[in-house]
Length: 314
Ligand SMILES: [Zn+2]
Image (tube, rainbow, N blue to C red; front, side, top):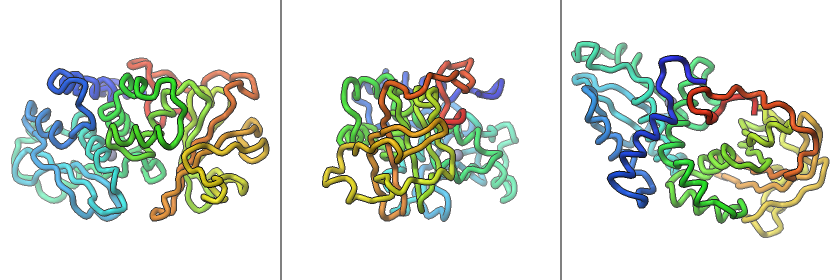
């Protein structure tokens, strides 16, 4: 849910998309966020004047005010560990700018001291939900939702994947088209697919975070943080369990993956990020639910009728 009076991330992203489409047409992917942010923000008294890469330690991105003038800078972590995620990070910070910033012009436009600048700065780890503090979770979700809709408009994404089997080749096509990471691409697919499916980001044998599709959620599939990754899963067994075919999901019998409402056979596709020590798993369930659909526990977004990233228990 969006707090009353706050702009909707989806509507805000769509407004930028409409302009982009009008100027660049259908051939506008991947979105050049640095250019769009600089251009679009010129309409405000405190525009974005710099987008730069730097070493940011534990953070992937920042939106911070200039000290001397009423302007904003977007900084992304250019450490190689974050390669392929820069575009989403820039879009996430652009989201904070449009949705959450305190306009600088309203502060008199004078120089800011360190403390004032710090208080206005957003320091972020987009998509990595397990790193979000409780207080910041809502605005982090909103910035992620904005980034997702700006970079991967849902109507275009649906057209690209229509009628195709989900697997690594299709996900690679999507990451190339939109210039996003596999995690961001899969996260979006989970959001709109009508399949029963779930994704899990795991490290050291436990889920850092996960997400189930609407339909999976309604059949009792939830992915809590800390969910133990089963011993017999591909995620635990490693690439050897993929039988030499890393492109397609591996069929696993009932009893390997278990959720709140029991176990059932799944097809599992796992991608290993050796350097980060993480894995990303896609679980595909039979489309006939093993249990009766339960009422969707999520609260519909009254403004958009579309889900926010991270809303609800799935
Ligand atoms: Zn953020």
